[in-house]
Structures are given as structure tokens and as C-alpha cells.
Image 1: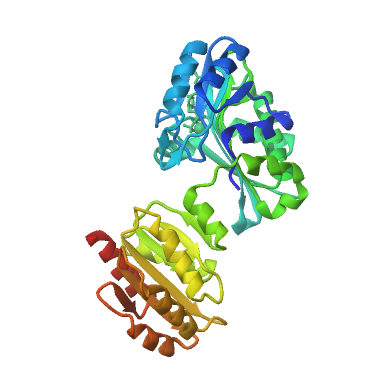
Image 2: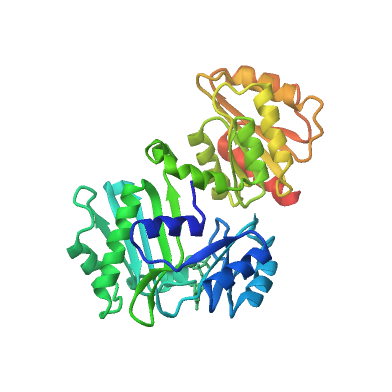
Length: 381
Ligand code: GDP
Ligand code: MN
């Protein structure tokens, strides 16, 4: 589960990493009150789970309470890359001397943690990584040993962080790593971790992904879940027992099994398209499940074509085909559907599908052919 910036920073604070003092605000009046309370200059920051808020106008400096009110009025309700802002975080403005980039993730390939650190953090880190890869330091951390003082200092040295505050930077890295491990995170990213005018090292932003499989170890994380405003489509899918994630493209995807759906996303992108979602209907998909899945996609205006990709294992293709046929019967289709069935009883399944084939229900033999057809239809539609 991804956390909001202010939630991640509350965890950092708990672990002893310095963060600016701030308040939550759901209304412009609350933002004004927060600014009065904090005193001096403040920053009003949109709380959405997507990067690039600064460039989208979701982060604004205010001289005092009136300006904080005005910025909160502009930012609340704003749409940032498809995410609506329901909450702003108002925090004391920081005096920034340098912006660093820090992240900790798991490198499954080498079975170690990976630290990525750069002295060139801030809003253009992606460009730095491409244009000046040497400015981005990557170092593996042995999970058994952990991030030692020695290794943290070496990272700080190699990433060319400020010499005078090297010890503070190394201490911040170790505390962030301790947070990453002890809180069972999949990702801890701080961009920027700043150096202030008086040499302090402070986390100004946070991107924290918690491993939901470890929630049983952290009952206090329930408060994070409660603050989470689910996107309507994801909520609908969850209530219907479907595993759904919204993406940016125009080809709606329905498949059985997470692995198959992931490969379907890859093949769609390989043939030049982009999926509008991930949707796994799980095993034993009958008419109800297919109907539910199509219902969810109907709520998405960005879908231009749909690709149903079923591989029969324990699930028999003829039963799924029966489900698709029943689901399509009487359904007013808003887009063409390409169906690919393979695996157990595929021949029987395809025969059943023949009964519903039309201009807008198109069978395909292979995954690649199905993806090509669906992408072409999405481009046309
Ligand atoms: P993001 O764009 O979603 O990654 O949001 P960030 O929290 O990283 O903020 C974007 C940028 O806003 C930072 O890189 C800073 O340059 C700037 N910013 C954020 N907070 C402050 C602050 O307190 N003072 C100043 N001067 N700039 C800030
Ligand atoms: Mn940032």
C-alpha cells in the first residue's frame, strides 16, 4: 500500500529522521488555521499518491495564513494526473541549500537491498539519471549486516553530498534504512532530502510503499488505510472481488491470473499500445465474474477496446466461454472486444464463442494476435 507524503513523513519522524512540522487540512479555512498555528512562511502541499506534484502546481509557498488559504482553495479539488486532491499538508517552509535524492528498495536479482543516492535530487531526478548517470550512486546493502555507519559514510562520500554535514547525512540514511526494514516497506524514497542553510539534513518529501503482507505485524498501520480515499473504480472492483488497478492507456484488459494479466500488459505495450487497467478475474471465471469485470470497465471513459485473455488450466475454457457468451448476451457494448482463449478445452470454448462473434466481438488465436487487434481497434476508436 502506498502512503501519502504526510503519512510517510510521520513514520520518518517516529524513526528520528528530521521532518518539517506540519498540519493536515481538508478545507481552506483549516489551511489558514494551520498556517496561523505554525507561524511564518509555510508550504501548502497537495496530498495525492502520484509524483510530480510540484510541476503540476500542487505545491505552493505562502507568506502567511491568507496566502495559505488562497493556495489551499486552488489546490483542494485539483486533479493531478487523474488523482483528486482531498487533503493538503501545510508545513513550515524550509530554507533549502541543497536537494538530495535517496531511496531504498529490494533488488530481488541479487537478494540484497539497494540504496540509490544523488546530490542532484529535486524535481528533475529522472533527467539526471538519464543524462548524468554518474551523479546517481547505487550500492547494495547486505540485509543481514544492515547499513553500517561505515557504508552510509561511503555512500555520502561517493554521492558527493555536502562535506560539512556528512555525518548528519549518513545518520539520516541509516535511520531511513532502519525505517525501510523495521516497517516492512517495499520502497522508501525521499526526494528531496534537503540540506538546510544551517547544515541540518531534513526529509522534505516521502514516498513510502508498505508491504501489505506484513500488516499483521503493524496493527497501528490501520490508521493509514482509514485515511485512504479509494478511486471509485478500484472501490467498485474490490467490492465485487476483482483485482483491479487503473493504468493510463486505452486498451481494457481482463484476464485470469495475475501472471497472465501482467504478460498481457507487456504484449500490449510490445505491439505499440497501452493498457487502461490491470484486471484479474481469478480462477473459475463464470458469467457473473465476466459481467462484473465488463461493468467495471464500462465506468472508465478512457477505454477504447477490450482484450479478454483467458488461459484454461484448472479453469476450463468452455466454462469461461459460456460465461463470456452469457455476459455479452443483452449487454450494450461500448467498445469492441477481442477474446483469446487457450488451454484446457480451448477448442470447445472457441466453438461456444462463435455463437456471439460479431463486428464487436472478435476471436483471436494467440496472445500477440489478440493484442495487435485490440490495439488497432483502440487506435481507430
Ligand atoms: P513532488 O514534486 O511531488 O516530488 O513534491 P516535493 O515535495 O518533492 O516538492 C517539490 C519541490 O518543491 C521540492 O523539490 C522543493 O524544491 C519545493 N519545496 C517543497 N517544500 C519546500 C519548502 O519548504 N521550501 C522551499 N523553498 N521549497 C520547497
Ligand atoms: Mn518529491
